[in-house]
Image (cartoon, rainbow, N blue to C red; front, side):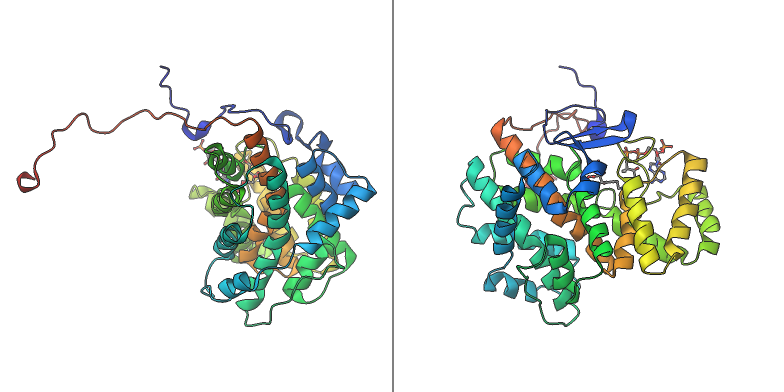
Length: 374
Ligand code: SDX
């Protein structure tokens, strides 16, 4: 037996996938063969969600049907609204999202049916309902009345509407849509691998997505978009940025929103998201965070040769859109549900229990003493 330890599964290929391809050597990312930035330019988020789940871009009839189903499934049960209403107001919204998906599993009639057809139906329901649950908590914890989903609005428009009671300018909605497209899928990242690992024991999709949400919450993964904003708020003014970042690096701190396990010379999603961050900053007439962004990025590349990942531009973009910082990672969730679901179905279709080995380094064999002898 080869007992070489590959901590963090560094560089290990554990399975095959048709969902997406990350190509660090050419700074590119494709979903089902389409470049992510081309999808951002040509499609709305719903089209990309359909692509990820159904393996191909929809024609107009397929899109209409998919959108109709998504819109018709947005509403939560009275029970789930009540549960969210009773959650501690100080809860992190990621924990609320995690619990909400878990409750959806208790309420779903098909929870124990993991056939492909049932998984597609459940994926659609989780995709449609999770934004409603997150937005409901957004309102509840501010002491505001819940705003029910509206069927006439697109996925992104509806999320803004449920949080703020209105839909912003179409350029802002487009920037949000682009962020969702860029967040939708990224191969065997931590949360997707978590979802696939849960699925590999033939567990159900609600459980796998619940686990994936817990995994995404961590600051080394999706939680980084919130940490980026905390950092920018600490820096406060562009004049402070140079000193702040140099001190952070002198103290060997990890700078959030930078670095990536796979991309070593830049995250393929950053240029597109940076462009939309700029557009949003212009509309909001607030360039402070853009200036801080550029200074910190320049120093990170110059001193460490470490590049931003997608969480670096999404953090300040969501802030300028008006979202509370702790809702940034839940926004990542509402998009990544598509990627997770596709991987869960792929895992089910060609399953092999995921069960790696560990090299034991604990005590050698010890004699058990009776309780009165210890
Ligand atoms: C996402 O994988 C995906 O696909 C994830 C994701 C997705 O779409 O699902 O792309 C989304 O999770 C993006 C990553 C968000 N996380 C952060 O922004 C947190 C900050 N970044 C890191 O801690 C780090 O870069 C990781 C966790 C992202 C990657 O970690 P690795 O591959 O385990 O690398 P490492 O931590 O061992 O770092 C290697 C070296 C170290 O220096 P040395 O010990 O070799 O001298 O690079 C340094 C690190 O200290 N380093 C950093 C750094 N990132 C790496 N130093 C300062 N700041 C950083 N951000």
